Length: 158
Image 1: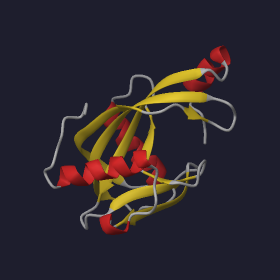
Image 2: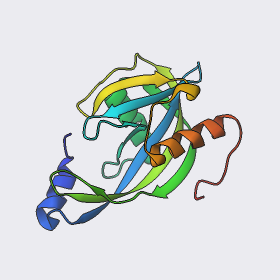
Image 3: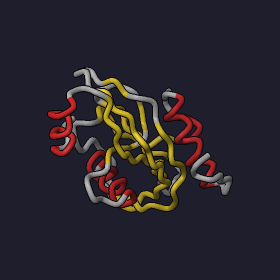
């Protein structure tokens, strides 16, 4: 996966030490109530569409961009579901990062879902009753999105 130039420039200064980054993720739902997921190229695990903000980028615009770049579909943001500090991630090259992730609920607008970049091995829609095996963090993201669709909301900071 390409590392953004601004992250690369920071890494030149700090090496592989812990880097704190703002992230965005989305539970994208289509008109059939299916959830859009990608199977990550780095871990092989199914996950919500996610990425990092570019300098000066607004979070809602960033997740719409990430969805288009990774899955080839257009989406619109419906709600902010959660603000979470994720556990540190240790990458194969030795880099360590920790993300403050803003989780959005998004509605599919147009396009055919497909692998649109090198970050995913597969992109697919899943019925909520037939989700693939995911990490607890990913499962919680999807659970929270589906609950919000049913009107069962909780404050984003909880």
